Amino acid sequence: MTKNFGRTILLLAFALGAGGCAALQPPGVTGPRNEAIYPVRFAEDSQRREAATLALNQLTQSTGNSGTFAAHLQPITATIESLPADPTRPLELPKVGVGGAMNEEETRESLRRFLLASRELIGADPAKLSLVERVDQPDGTKLAIYEQRPFRYPIRGNYGRLQIRFMADRKIINLTSTCIPQADRIQTSLAAVSPVVKAEDAVKKIRENGVMYTDANQTASNLKIPAATGVNPQGLVTYILLSKTRPDTLEFHIAWEIQLVNAPIKTVYVDAINGETLGVD
Image (cartoon, rainbow, N blue to C red; front, side, top):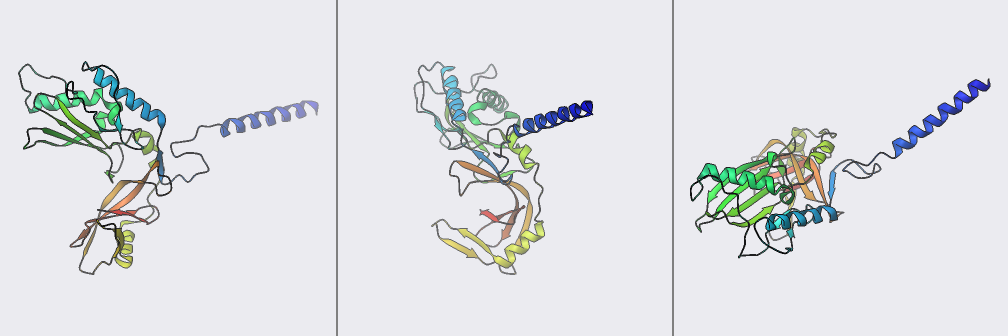
């Protein structure tokens, strides 16, 4: 009996120890375990801002600039918003090729190398950036626009884009990024959520209830959808918006992108989890 009692105490101690270890598991990117797992949230972080500032100064010093620069960073994401003004020693794209001016193929390779060197500042894995536009402007500047594609569903909202404006002599005029840092961690959290609202349900809601939106004059309106108006679901997207309750936090939603034909607004985004209208374009 004494042996059985000792074994019981040992098992009880092991169970309590295992339970204590489970309680100490680190929280995920969505925050403490007592928070809802949806929408996925991404909060401002002072360490991320410091790292981006350091990355900018390292990048500028690599071109021969001395001293430190005040970083112009985006709120929350801490990605680059604009380059500091320094006309004497601007940033430059790496030189590719042996000729004086780079051709288009060399220019794209130069841009690729610059992205690798500045990934901390732009907040994105270069392998998950797609060049969607490369144009020469009438004023002599050149523009490269990238889209960030780290999620299962494409990004919508005012995020996930990178613009590099530069000259033919490789001098960078400006750099702006609304990319999402730590996107892989966010995608892991989004992958745990399955859509509940079907596309036809989202269309039905729009037709029956109309669409509440705010126009360019900041006037709230409720758009009623005539029967003749086309309401066409385009697919699921990752819709990113500023939290209404946390000004230092972004929210990531899985949403139906629905196109309206012959209407004052062109696109409506309906949450695929709870049916809420998230925004319009």
